[in-house]
Image (cartoon, rainbow, N blue to C red; front, side):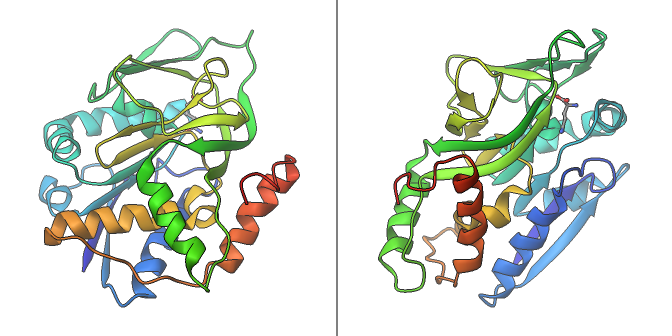
Length: 267
Ligand code: GLN
């Protein structure tokens, strides 16, 4: 049984981010794992956050981010503790920016971040383009690779890919402090800032990324990694998830690779 907390579904939910919740729920249910989704909207009760085993927060435009930030700050202590204790979570775009020190809007307004991670984001304004398009990144985390090897050997899914695919649309450029690991290396697209080839961030079991799309249905191994981490933390033992038939999901994954001429990459 997993309790999944969906932070600010009404305001932080753009470019298909809702699909991530659907895929987490379905992949649990297909395996007989019970799921409760807690919608944690503005003014939610702190106890509803405390009981969550897995967290998800999507992206938004600046206006919504500003509204959410006030409420989020009231919950900052609990959320920070949970992230530091290793509660797994996926934070997309605007939500990813919240994990850092601040997000500077195009007009110079600062939206304070939770400061959990040593990163910051600045939107250089209208003289610089938004970073939009398909993204392909090479995963840096060995935990993904181990899972893919297992999938690869199974008769159900005989493909593997060390890439994550998605779609980005952001004005902010994110810069990671020296001690932080990115989620991946950009093969195609812009990623964190369009310059240093980093994309996203990993910290314990939390992942920040610019990949919308939604990301999890096109990268089912990522969904499973989150589910596995959540179950292992909750039940304090190592858990092997049963394999699912991911052929459709991998076709979607491959379609993005193919579009950008990466279809032969590491298959
Ligand atoms: N407002 C942020 C930016 O443009 C986040 C956008 C998003 O979440 N898609 O950088």
